[in-house]
Every structure is written in structure tokens, then in C-alpha cells.
Length: 293
Image (cartoon, rainbow, N blue to C red):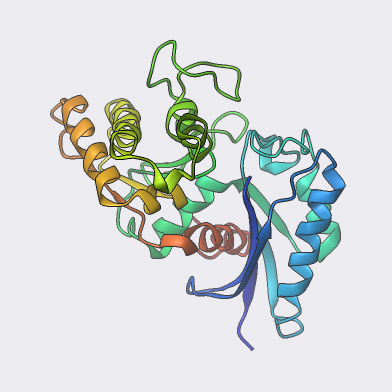
């Protein structure tokens, strides 16, 4: 019987659950739209139903732990979460509620930090100990590995590249600031600017979004001496090469220090499976396996 970790990814657009083995292989994944509601229990009920559907496919006794990636901010260890893109959850006790539901050890962390773990484990960051992984989707998040360690910060919220300011006095952001990367380049921002589906954005919008992402990556690379930036998320991957070309061009203009000129920006290696593999990596870390143990 193969040992498995339950992997949960919670986003503003969709909830996803899967099973991840000790080699980072994903199986039996399923997803549902994130309920649009002000009722926190309605969101959790949708998540719990999805968990039940996926765990029913696992052999009895095969599940070792559960890893949960969720948008932030959050309190240490995901004791409570307040995702900016899930208005119903403010200081929602996610870790304890999932533990009560699945009766497994549960690790909760920022979804983009989980992505960083997954890419470090079996993705495009294998062998790199200084990199940024980021998600450009409904919102924008990031996780940073520095000197071979996933950065947590004082309260576990390190890596929020979506709230690096890229346009002074720019668009208002859901965090309360102005000109944040999330306010300028997320799927939510693109839809507000164009009035349409983000991946149908015109060429000038695609190039501007890529430019904003490259600008933010340059700031982080100059600050932290990184060698790699991996970009995932439905918006970034959906916009494709024109987005990445604009991001690389802006990165080249802005990262001019001797140590930062060589930083690379490229699509994340795990594609659409990255968030769930990353969540699985969180669970395997509880078992003393996976990356960064």
C-alpha cells in the first residue's frame, strides 16, 4: 500500500484537493469553484465535500498527513487565515477545522510558499537554493527559498510579492495600499481594466502585466541575491510567451547589479499541478520527508 498525503489548495476562484505520494506524483485530483458568499461555513462545507470525495479513493490507512496551501495573510502555521480573495474567511480557524474533519496531522501555509516547496522538490527549482516562486492568478503570491531554507518571516507571511509596489500612486489594492503588483497585474486587476477574461487581454495589457511582474522580480532579486524566479498561475501561464517576454525585458532593465544580472525568469515546472504538489510537500514535511526537511 503506497503512502499518500492529502493535498488541499484553496484559492479565490477554485478549491482543489488531491493525493500526493512520496515521490511528488499527484493522483485523484478534483476541484470545485470557490463559493461566492459571505458565509464562512458555506466555503468550508464546499471544501469538506471535496475532501470527502477525494479521500474516498484512497486505500484505508494510506493517508499520512494533510498539507493545505491557502491565500494569506494568516497567523503562524495557518492557525487562522484571512485570504484577501475569500471575503467570507476572516481569522477563520482553518488548521483546526481541517484536522477535525480528516483526523490527520495538518500543515497549513501560504499557497505560493507551498508552490515553492513543490518546485524545489520535484519541479524547475530542483538543485537551486536561492529562488522565488510566484503565482499570478486571481491574486499574486510568492514564496522564497533563501540559503536552502523556505522563508517564513515573523508570522509566516514572508514572500508576499503581490504587495510589492510597482506603480507609485497606482490602482487601489485589496490590502489597502496603492500600486501593488496584485492591484496592477492579477487576474482580478486585468478583468477590472479590460472588462473581460484576463487571458483575452489585448497585447498592450499583456505586455504591461509582464512588465509589472518583471519589475517586482527585479526588486526581489536585487534585495535577496536570487538566481531564479519561477512564475505559475492561470493568468501567467494563460498569457504565455508575450507575458514572459515582457517580464524578462523589464527584469533585464531593472536587475543591473553584477549579482542580479544573471537571474532567470521562467514558467514554473509543475504547471497546473504545482499548487497541489506543493500542498502535498507541506504534508510530507510533517512526516520528515519531502523538501526542506
